[in-house]
Image 1: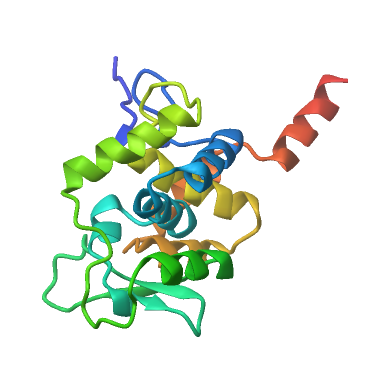
Image 2: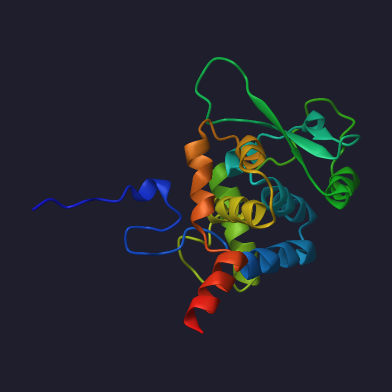
Length: 196
């Protein structure tokens, strides 16, 4: 008898069925908690993570020239690309986020880092905002869960898969396709017709 094993690394659920992404209401609460955060630099950091889907280390790597004010976008250096070539991806963001970044950070100083935290400290700070947002503990309640939540949100709002791939910095469309696994409103509607 053969057992088929599921590659859980390429899934939005763990081997024991735990969700790895922030769902819609959790993502909304996280953004609201970030907007209310009294630490302004933490506020902008959390909003950048939520609106770009970047990895925490990519967010910490941002410098003043990464914020493209005229384009209302953020240029992220893809840190997962191990090749010698530097790969930059441009992700559109809300104009209000660009305004907040301009208000708090001096974008006129070339090469100035926006945040000086270590990766582990940034992780702790983001987790604290998740606690403020009343997001229950679990695999989903992490910066990586926020990244996955961005991917799910993008797919559910009709963003084409190739744009989601580019914005998230995935080398393979197969990696991006995991976000298609999440049941959306249309699929739920079809299922409800079946139950009637």
